[in-house]
Length: 221
Image (cartoon, rainbow, N blue to C red; front, side, top):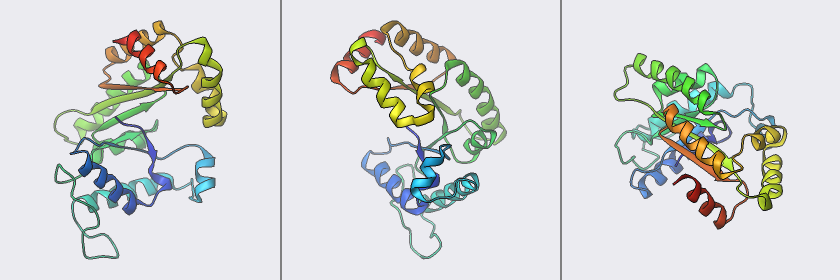
């Protein structure tokens, strides 16, 4: 499963070590999803500069891959992370909506994760990323994943809406508008992403409850 964390508000060597540890513990099944972030409050509360986040992302990815290869990083002559199961890097998925975000996949990533977008948006991204991937001479093909939210049942609608609007702030109404709210919508959303070429779709509960997982399973399986 892949969600996106903001690598630009984390210390890259520590993040590399944490990711490599999870890679080892999971037997190579862990995938690290990263993005630069777009919400000012993420940078205000962490004390990082938002204006150079793209440059810092590229530098962080370079440093993390250096560490994963077992090469010493500045300040030490010894490896600082466990060696990834595949021998060279923790698998990385890239999120974002800019050309620079897409370009990073050609160098650093195994694919792209779409956060909160539509199947039509993913279809366009697939064409763009595949072109970048082939242009970089990467073997095989990139992976494509997407994520969204669901809240099935009128009795959880208020809680779900409140959770999303509270968490996403100014983006909350848009995120709630795009959330799956009926079994029919769930089936249509899953089918549309599959037809668009999505390799994995992750739907998060907006109102956490066992019953929500059961309703979603009944709707789409």
